[in-house]
Image (cartoon, rainbow, N blue to C red; front, side, top):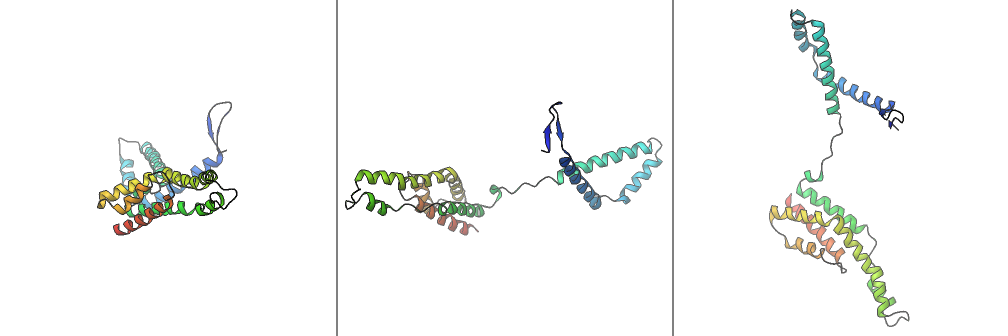
Length: 216
């Protein structure tokens, strides 16, 4: 543990590893800044003027300048070596954001297990040729398998992708007007899942990719 709370004093203390890391970081940045920016030829006239001045004590002035320089260099080292913020997705151009969204949604759809086969379940639980079949049994198995798959697919889309899809759609409308081929799968995906959601998602991905290519 690098940073710990003193049990007796109730104060925080910084361990040697963290302190050494901070000192190395500051020393490296200070040395690099001095090498790139500080020139003794610029400081020489100032030093000579202060030394010849009758109303300032040269030693006091020199010490003050030294302390000031150290403070400036430390502050500069801290600012320059802070971790750079990553570029936010909202800073990307609209075509790039559409492509990123389409890639994520395609990964979500393709990453799921295949949808249960309705014909297979019907033959096993709903067909009159099966001794264990009945309308009630088929309805139960349909709910437990196919409808569950559809519901979970739709829930994942609504939770993680629906809002972003709508925002991208609105940006496209502001840029070039409404697109009926895009609105159709978007509207279908807002309805209760009835077996076509995975197809609507694929149509949405294809349309988004096409529109992104037309914006380049």
